[in-house]
Each structure stands twice: as structure tokens, then as C-alpha cells.
Image 1 (cartoon, rainbow, N blue to C red):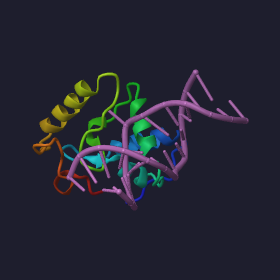
Image 2: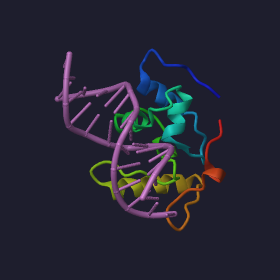
Image 3: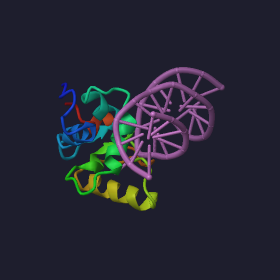
Length: 110
DNA sequence: TCGGTGACGCGTT
DNA sequence: GAACGCGCCACCG
């Protein structure tokens, strides 16, 4: 699957559009989102776009790092990590004992 | 205009 | 397999 090179609304909007395609109960990695946007080295920009969502309706909790774990962020990393984990568990995503998701089982394969 | 800054990822140790 | 180093590059002040 390959998506628009870039939306006229900007790279951040391109990332948001792709993230909205992730189905419930599945997760995608930052690098995967970047690659789908034809920007294979822009994984950090995906994180940056998520940090600046500002009320955009995007299932941000379905984006995790390449190791299948939740990345730290914000002023209160623990609180936000717990919230993301809770939202994913509600969708049926399973975390192992060390807080990691099996990407073979729950990774999005577009 | 320009440099610091990351919700990252890969290779190496 | 974890910890570490380093390259990456759009954004924003």
C-alpha cells in the first residue's frame, strides 16, 4: 500500500490521514506511518505531528514504537503511557509481562 | 534565516 | 536482549 505523496495541507495532515486508517485493535509503528507517506526517514516527524494534534480527531493511541512498546512523552510520561495502554487494552490489544505488544499479532498490515 | 529540538530507528557493543 | 551512540529532518521561535 502506498499513499499520497503529500497532502496539500501538509505533512502533518498526511500523517494524520494515514493514522486514521489504522483499524481498532491494531497498532502501527512511527516508521511505518512515515513509510506509507513516502517519507521513510521521517519517523520522528510522525511523533512530532502527534505531539501537536491540538484537538484533531486521530487514534493516536494506535501508534507505538518499532519494539512494540509505548514511547514516553509529555510532562507526565507515566500517566500518558498508562492511558494509551488502557485504550489499547479496551480494543483487545494484549501486552506481555514487560509491557510490549506482539507486532506479529497486533501490527497493522495495510 | 538558522539552530535547537524531538510521541524515532538502526547498528553496534 | 538491553543499553548506548548517532544519523535523521520538518518544525518553530
